[in-house]
Amino acid sequence: MNKINYPFSKEQLLPQEERLELNQIKKEFIIGVPKECDINEKRICLTPDSVSYLVLNDYKIFIESGAGIGSNFSDLDYSEAGAKIVKTKEEIYKCPVILKIAPLTDIEINLIKPNSILISALELKKESFSYITNLINKKITSIAFEFIEEDDGYLPVTDQLGAITGQAAVLISSELMSNININGKGLFLGNISGVPPTEIVIIGSDKIAQSAALTATKLGARVKVFSNSIFKINKIQKLIANPIYSSTIQKKQLSKALMRCDVAIGTIKSNTNSDAIISEDMIVNMKKGAIIIDVSIDTGGTFQTSKLTNHDKPTFVKHDVIHYCVPNIPSRYSRTSSLCLSNIITPYLVKSVKFGSFENFIRNNNSFKKGVYLYNGLNTNKIINQILNIKYNDINTII
Image 1 (cartoon, rainbow, N blue to C red):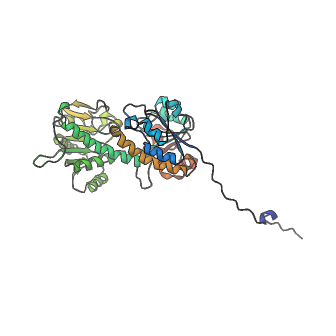
Image 2 (cartoon, rainbow, N blue to C red):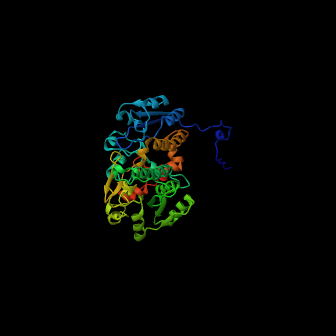
Image 3 (cartoon, rainbow, N blue to C red):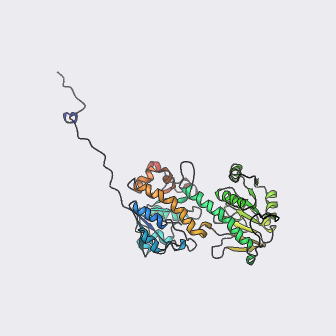
């Protein structure tokens, strides 16, 4: 008689003890926040209130001494919130996670430890091939603020800072118009009965332009918007509710609007100064004392006459037109911008604790995963592949 072969052994058929999956031992969550090297960058990613909240959620936060001064947060504020204050960058960059505003400098790249996690802005068009390759060589996992995207397409950092920039552009133009010491015309930005309203031309239709248009309209200015995106123009019209002048970018119509305006705000990027949407010939014909706010100066600029300025010397005059060409306008309002950034980043950091490690959090959180442009030294961003020709890897296949 043939022996019957059973698929299970006798031991396997006996009742077994229930085996529960054990949670992985949580890694220590340690974040280092360095002081920014750029003197024009006064923001910080975490406020004392956020630090206090993170410490309650099992984080250890190390802050470089003086990192919050530009936003009017003292070392004592952070110490009382539960952070440890350290004196040197060398100590900060021993932390496994680095959280900062601007991309790393060459000195900071040398200091950051291999296999660290970097959370900061990328500012891709500014950064060279060597910057990315240096991070790759150290097998850094890098998350860019500007790439973090919610499931509905909302870009929390980009959109919120864009809103600040748009409102700030209008408020700055108001200051400049009233200041006769820098060739301003002594005008008030608004709409006073019996006095012609201020005329503002906005070239662009992104989040910054939307915010600027809404702010200027609420202040009573007469606003004209020029953009080649009809969809985004419609979005601005719906946002403002009241009808405003809008047009696609046509040289004749745009030139006429610039000749009559008191303020021109540009948000459209260009590859070089010579490619700028607004030519020098058009600027020559603008009114004496008119204001140009070139928001996109750090990515080529909207106006051909623009040149980079800073927060200490923000303006120059050319063709009797006042130019304000400061990059990183939100840093002018450093405390507000810091609060904004901190309120966006902190919830992500708190959520990461539940997953036991940043790696698990990135794996399971689609919004944060979209922000990753390097994972353990591998490029996971298609834009970097297109601009710098660095091999692209689908993050879902390597994480």
